[in-house]
Amino acid sequence: MVENTTSPTRASEPSACTAQVDIWSTGSVAAREKVSYWRETVCSAVFGISVETLPEQFSARITARTTPALRFAVSESNDYQIARSKQEIDANPSDHYSIYLQLSGQTVSSMNDETFTFNANDIGIYDGRQPFRAIHGGRRAIAVLPRAMLERRAPWLARHPHRQLAADSPFAELARRHLMTLAASETPLSNTAMSLLAENLCNLVALASVEEKAPGRLQPELQMEAILAFCRQHLHDPDLSPNRAAEGLGISVRTLHWRFKQIGQTFGRWVRENRLEGCAIALRDPNQRAFNVSEIAYTWGFNDLSHFNKAFRARFNMTPREWRHEQRLNG
Image (cartoon, rainbow, N blue to C red; front, side, top):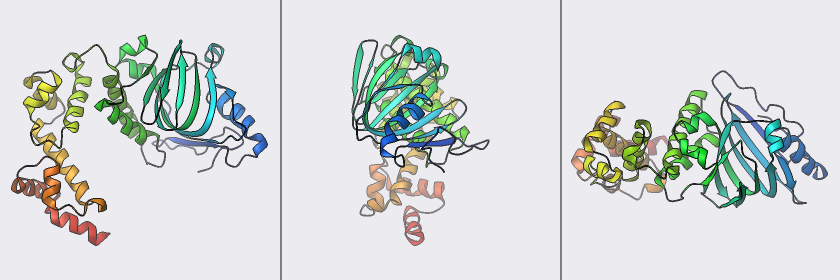
């Protein structure tokens, strides 16, 4: 992979099934050229934004992964101010939303007389058709998604083109994980996998941003995402049951079972499989070697050790102890 340091040419040519990866960095640019390089070559030519202020000692880096319809990036810099004006939007139209995860540092953004401050783990949503100003700092993960892709699930976003997601939402936490997977260019992903993850990200952002609808009134696709998110959140609880999940989501038990049937699953099988996957990962985690098998099983919601051992062997064709021992031998 080659870094772009003097022109916005492609860093790598994508194959039919992989995304293009580009890197822009001031790292190897002469000190006197860093500001002009970032302002003209990167911001203006590539991203269609203008730079209003840059510090004297400026450094920045962007790694972007792009498919024909999607773009994901990780950006890191010291503080600088950018803007996208009406004139820039007219000259370089882009019918998209940007979903933005602050990883470290702080970003302050303004749109339509509304200002948000994003600190680590905060997620923001921007309408690409609206002018904005922002002071960028620290490290960020960004997804640029077609408008129709997100508004199909979250039509209410059209009324609020600039918003900050609730930090404590379980859907926001899952959205963070998806964003990081999509933006991390070192993680190998096919275009198909990226598209599926992007679809899931849109569902999670819709669930995290919805204000006026209870889960029971959501469209079926989003309702299933809400059910799965609730189950993942409570997977460690041995008392997780169809009744409890349905009650927590404000839907009927019949609806819950029907949604699982639509994805070729049952509630019990989905919970068991995901608990077993969690145990399998924990058993091979070097940081969890101090925990014995039963402690890991109980942590993941199993309350019958005999049932756990039987289910684990049926799933992985070896006992939990054999599974853990095999990893140590291979390690």
